[in-house]
Image 1 (cartoon, rainbow, N blue to C red):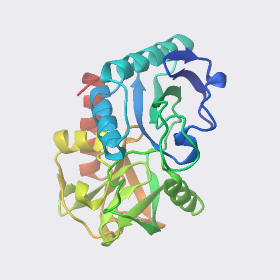
Image 2: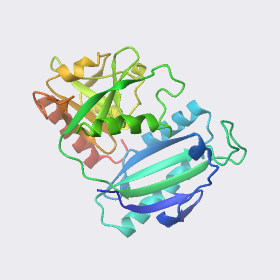
Image 3: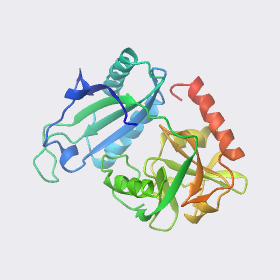
Length: 282
């Protein structure tokens, strides 16, 4: 099902989603120079907004990209969320906040016009209770200049996800250049190992996911380096992301895991659901 556009805000003003446009010379369009955050709007409230804005600032700092003040971005988010609430009866929606390098000459150098800021929201597609994953033949570069930054340079993820979907899976998983388990195209990975939950450390090159951080803090998940083969060998495992929450993995490369969800996964999912219901900005 294609997500339905509900609201958009571009460079200081709400606009109709069909008229939300940027320059053909925008650096985000021409070279992928930008950062973004995806937030869950849960019953009219953006979840974990503070954490998402903090990560946006960290990603922008990695790129040396100017971003507006946090109060400006929070106000833009609030205006779009208000439009979502007024225009729909969605219990949950997806909101995306994007900041690009703005209009610039063709080429890699930035222009002087300043950043482009876009906030857009749409319906959140329902996800199945479990997900099949495929380990792709390409690697994350943990030494990349963009390692750990959430940038708009997402073509690598597009290719990997298409590869996974062509094999009947719902997510692709990367190793890094050292053969360690890293992350999905838009998710972090948590594996049941010897009765405990383990997720790759940030040194693996994975994104510092907001949901990942929350399950680390609240759901007895640990960080540890894992070989990529640990995922297929696990009795249970799950993905975390803003839109997935805690989603059990059913199979890896076509081979079912023993439990989906297993008891550790079920406990983590319950803990995260309780947090979502009780604290909108943990």
